[in-house]
Image (tube, one colour):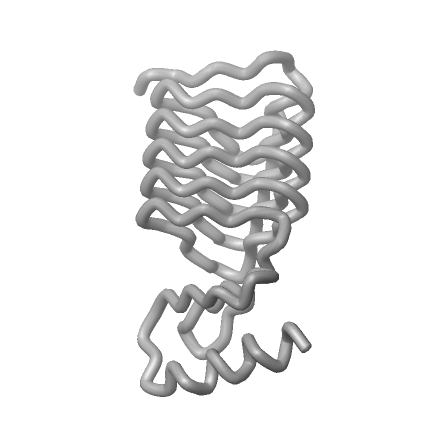
Length: 141
């Protein structure tokens, strides 16, 4: 397996089975620990923390004060930045861009992203999209 690059030893824990591979980069004050995986030409930098079995895959880019954990995945050329938290086995994929103005919720197999401009992204199987639109409007009042 082709290894990745870390800027300094403080970027990657020496405990558990965390891994940076496949030409991925971890630099700045970013920290990977707790069985997390960074693979497939992905980048993690800034003050980002990736831990607790999280995976950053397929050219994803994480920067800023982002935390990705608890089996969450960021994949498929997606970008996550700012003060964003991605957790609870959420999957952010297919060229999503999530910044610090977003709030991410996971409920009943559906990931809902609200942002300050009342845009709404729903990922998952939902039979009641109007419910999430109503929540978005209420959240922004």
